[in-house]
Each structure stands twice: as C-alpha cells, then as structure tokens.
Length: 275
Image 1 (cartoon, rainbow, N blue to C red):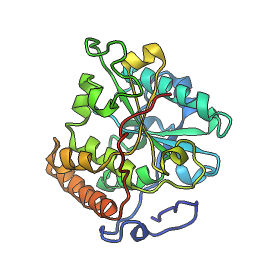
Image 2: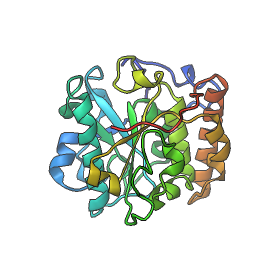
Image 3: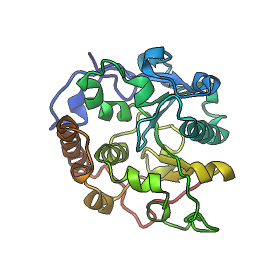
C-alpha cells in the first residue's frame, strides 16, 4: 500500500513522522455526505456505501473525520442527526468554495470493516486524519441543566465550559484524546482549505451537540495548546484492550514528536469560535 501526499502525489510516511515505525496504509474509505444525508441513518461498513479517497478530486473535496466518544450504530438516529446538522451548518459557510456535494465523511462504523477489521486500519487513524480537512465530534446530550444563556458565548473557553456528559466522556477515552491531538498536530493538506487558513493553518475541531442542533450552532475549536497535552495524555485515558493501548502509545510518540517541532498552537484564545 502507498501513502498519498498532501498535494495528491506520493509522499512517504517518514516525511512527516520520521521517528515513527513505517507501516502500510490501507485505503481511506469515505462516504459522500450527499448519500449519507439521503440514507437517513449511519450505514454499517458491510453495506458498502464508501469510496476510496484516491478516487476524489482532492482540489475540490472536503474530508471530515468524525471522532466520537462511542461507536455508533445504524439505529443511532440522534448521532446521525447531529452529524447531518453539523455538516449542513458548515456548508452554509463553505458552499461558495467547495459545495455540499464535495463533502465526504470518515466514520469508523462505516469506513472500517466491522466484520473483519484489520489492525492496520485502526493503526492508520493518524494517516486518515492527516488526509482530512476537519475533525467533527457529535455529542448526544440528553441533559440540559448545564446549557444556560451565555454559558457558551464566543468569549468563553469552550473546551472548559462545554459540560455535556458526552463531551466529558470523550476526553476520558484514550482514542478520542489521541484523535484530537493528532488533528491538532498533523499538517493540513493544501493551503487554501476553508477554516484552516483562518486558524494559522491548523485543522479545525468542529463540535455540535444535541442542544446546539436546537439553536443551529456549530462550534469551531482551534487547535489545542501544550497545556492540554499535559492534562489529557492519551496513554492515561480509558482503553478497551492492550492492542488499543499499544497503538495509542505509538500515536502519543508521534504527537510528542510533532509538538517538539512546534506543530501546535500557542495562544491565549484556545477553544473559541462559533458558526
């Protein structure tokens, strides 16, 4: 297998993580958002609704990596609705540049073989994130006591004040922490992608929860700064197996390597922004 570089050509894995063990890259399988929206549910991998990223026109496509705290199922209508609403809200902004028909999603339940998942697919998550333009976290939140007027104004530190139970659970899991930090440190392909240019070239972390759907609000969270790396070390998060721990530990090595090179945002206004 081979790696597709930032500009669409071939680029070795070692070019952006020289200290990380070389591995083969399974194809990144994506579902077109237009199809996802038409289906009305989160499809399982066995339904074969995905296409390989290499078939896309990378100059026009916008790839969103969906990072969530629980593995979805096709009956998970609440999570499905949030994903659709989040992308639609985003498309209101990027439509003139890309268009909704060119948005594609990566979701583990849809994109990774659920019957015969190879370990190399899970170990390629960093590669899939590197080929994505944004990362999206949908939060199913049945409680509302924390969601009060002005509690999440653009002046508030969203990472700290977003108190939905699902968001807290997200940051307790090793995989979620690793995905968030990989998104913050790995390079964004191309220089003209929406949002990344306004965030010092960093890949945005998009957040929408149940309460946000009601008010049509999509949060854009700038890349995490060093203090979050110290507080939410992925290897200290919850894992389901030793294999998961081993993979997360390798990702943590990569994150540290990238951070040591300055591939993260420093600044006073971390965790702000709304669409």
